[in-house]
Length: 384
Image 1 (cartoon, one colour):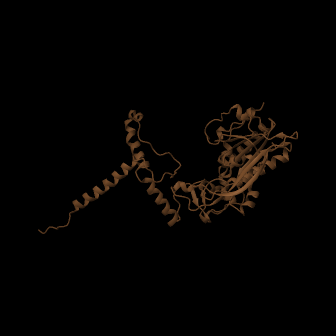
Image 2 (spheres, rainbow, N blue to C red):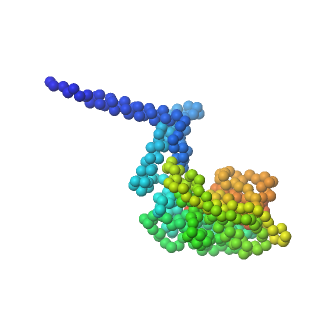
């Protein structure tokens, strides 16, 4: 019987098996090599770690932990993921399964803005709105009983000011989340600051939000502080604010400065300019009898991004925005500051800080896309 001189199926299968094993070996070896060609890939989670000695007490859990470790740390994994993201975005213009939307003119938009951009009435239930009304009323009363005014300000979404969202996400109604909050009947005379009009006017001339990020830039926060200051002046004209020489220039954005491109491990596609206000010769008018402004501001990440322009309302300030889950721990030096920036998770926004710091202006900030967190704020204790 005639036999072929070509390699048989067995040799062919053996060759493929060896290639497969070598490929796996390269990836496994790369798991333990301290070289990362894509160090900026950010997936909003912590990678699985290698099993520790403590896991020896639970030997049945070790196989699953090993699998998770190699899944997350396989050599070259992030490089492959990065190139896959690049292909999906650039070639297919497709969603990549991460919490963002690829908007118009190359803008990146946080996916959690979509429903609030569309003004979906189902986003907030009547019971949540009532809870928000109770929260605002109680916060206002608590501040008022301590000689302070409460300022409530919503940081508008990026898409509220720069509507670069794709056309396949049409609006469902013309009544926005901010409008629904403004319609709430609050018994206590709090100050509501609506930033949309002034931001939209200035957005015609320059961007007020980071093109690829999730926050407003320094010029937008400067406008926000000015609106807050003007609104307070109408209610408490006896408060004096710091004055300073303001210089407004532009600078190139830093690599990955509030940029979601790092989620893909990719560099920013171009260099863009951002407004850069700077202050000098800050001082207070000490000739009159007006009360010096003392500001206690509670909020989220939008408040944290307002820190570079806080000098509009304060000469000195203390900041707890970098430790969102930690309690606010202050010193005697903090008590002498003109402002406190408390940008922490809702359950850490302790109103009893008013009893210690004794502000005359209390600010409650919340970003539009996370407006439901307002219902999670703690109710202040009974003032009696």
